[in-house]
Image 1 (cartoon, rainbow, N blue to C red):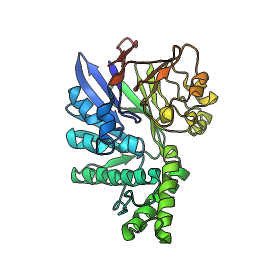
Image 2: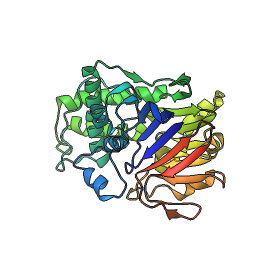
Image 3: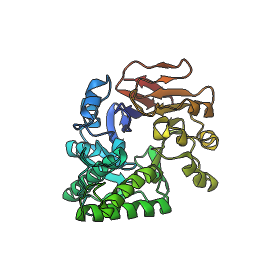
Length: 342
């Protein structure tokens, strides 16, 4: 049996994948870690029924180790919980859309500095990315960078994965921005608005990095006993067009909707190519973007079932689920699909 658990980490992604035989867990992987359980986000976790930091949910499920940890990209709502997870649980392989080398930016983004919120969060993300790299180094682990498309990679004898990598041009731009930000931020920590042109430039680069990061995602398509699950991270729908043009399939029974339900995550061509029977939104009821956007549902067949990790209204009844900690799918040995709200 394959179990796919979409953990309620609020507005963020954290997805546990387990293969079980005779009730025994033989493989486990975590894709993304949600927001960090720190001073800024702790209240959001603790004040919303069902929201749970990834490490705590894994402990409650009796996870003792992870065979694979995947970071699709380093926006805070995806990387935030990863350092706590890898420090809490022994883990095997590490995959990431980008491997950090060097020192994180020494930038003061306190409230007195006129940094945009996105730029402040990007500094936090870069520091977590550096922390993950340091951890891997101390553990003598290599983080595998998902740079290219690779198909039908075996994870177990029954479970395989298509790994969709980062567009080369986007990667080059992202890498250049990260290196420049860390070099300038490491050498100069001046306040934005102080008249220091270098500091103003770093803020603009942080904001620019935030804006391209969704397009830098890596994505996964899992296959098990004739069923498929597409974990689309935060990728725009247009990312998939060259893959489709090359003749590759992205069809899936279960789709993790990209970008938490924002409009850029779907198009008619993308939805037709995936043709899912189940769509899951990793989104919180308190998200500031009013996700999922009502327009996205029209791209799917009328028989498609929609679920969300948070308490948000969904068609056909437009009534929110009761509070729950996870949306769980089980693919049986007979290829049947079972859905549970945990």
